[in-house]
Length: 312
Image 1 (cartoon, rainbow, N blue to C red):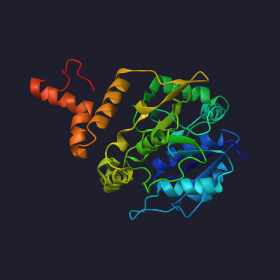
Image 2: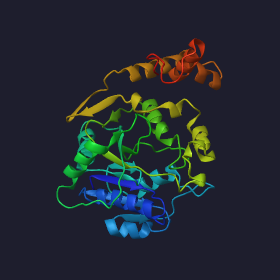
Image 3: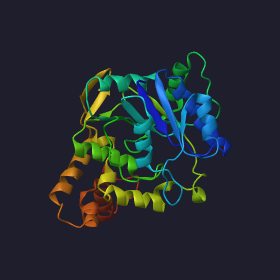
Image 4: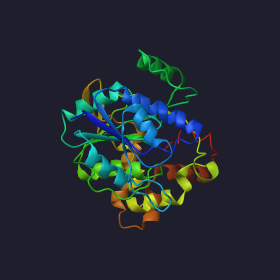
């Protein structure tokens, strides 16, 4: 039995920039020791990349009409072929270090069911990573100097026991909404949602969207709209790390601390419960704090950048 199984559906390695990013990420996973790596899909170079890092290559992942792998199929294959109690679906552009493995084992020793995730550090990587001795210390210093901590939305890995997420909609990977649903579903099931940000430095290598039609982000794509529909509408895809129940800090599992952003999120959830009888579009107008801000700006004639602290 391996301690943890990392699984992903990489993009084809045909684009040199994408290939470099994914090779950096996969090489970091292979440095973790007692982990298993499953790479899924038939895209160009995935089989060869699997051989380079000692991963198992799995074909047969189901895809939607656009050819994008489905999250449901990926999790099914991981559960079917993994040899560990912990699964971690992770984007193939993420560099991770031993602190991810340590966090996983820490939480596993305390909870039977949970999902662990963290905010990522965005970092421009212009070269092949050097994985000689001391690479983690060097990378942490680079992240400290040049990295940017991402907001609470847009998680790039989800860690969970293998008996969690047994029923997942057919979300398209790499499109909007499915990651938010993972948090929503955990909360609905009553599983602790663990924010590992204080304990895990997960590095997202900044890239463009040249692999997508028009070279633009996926948010406006039909596949993202379909993900939203499969999730059950706008409300489930509003879930982010602001909805985490716990935080892993210095080896201790504690309740997530209150902040202004979490307070606003709590108010939003309360309003959604109070006005549940309204049509979904109207609930969106009533419940979302950012829309309050825009209304107030219009009422008082305040321009962007001079809102006098009306954040939300």
